[in-house]
Image (cartoon, rainbow, N blue to C red; front, side, top):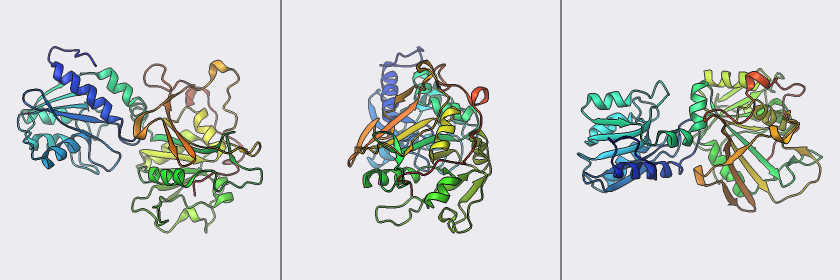
Length: 382
């Protein structure tokens, strides 16, 4: 159990924060942080929990309030314990600070301040409405929970998910270039579910020229989902006018660069806050080599090729001591999950000083990738 670091926090609030941190892991990493909330009754009993499921869904506070109201619970005079300062802005959802006030909650305990300027200031709004607000409970644990998100916000760049679909021997295509379908139908469906949650999906021009992918999010029946990511192609070669990736909905952008950091800057300027990099191997390696990946999702098929296109190229690592270290991530369904014949592996970047990746930074050690704009092919990402 987290220790109450301040006499202003009760044992019930400390226990509730532990639960809030745990339920937050049910959500998905990305443009928004993982957040959990617990509402305590006037006697300190736990009434309801809530968590944020991903961009565009109710925040943890609103989720908890809605659940309480559905059960007919009167929240007047209750306490909400939440892992992040309640937001103060109208985005895809309304401001949580106002929802808390309207619900009659009289005390809010949260772990850490929201560093995102548009959302910050909720604590001040709550106090202005007469709500008792205390912060700092389990702050270290809350920072660790969303370490990568905090780092992306500080760096003013999108949160980066890197997706690889590969064989047991780390191949993403056979020697003849074929890659459909290394992944199982269940893995493909899972990937399309992820596409519905992100702001943009990124591949290289070589992938477009070889595979001609649509890069859309699709439902089980093959129909395109209502929510679609921006389709981004990175590289210096032109994307053909008839390329499927261009589509007809205007949600296409070409990034005329081979530099991962510059590509993220361009996407951030377009309002992208969560991008999934899907390939090919040179782009995957460039982002990893630049230390610009926050989350790894690997679909591992029980297949051996022995030769073919490797998932990654040289990362500039010559000794084991410099190897990139990744941690298993229990968020969003667990670190290891069976999908049909495949395994879905979910990892988060390994920490050193609490906020930065455990490998060399882009500014100090990485050069933009040269040669082709991307790898020979992608897998399962059409």
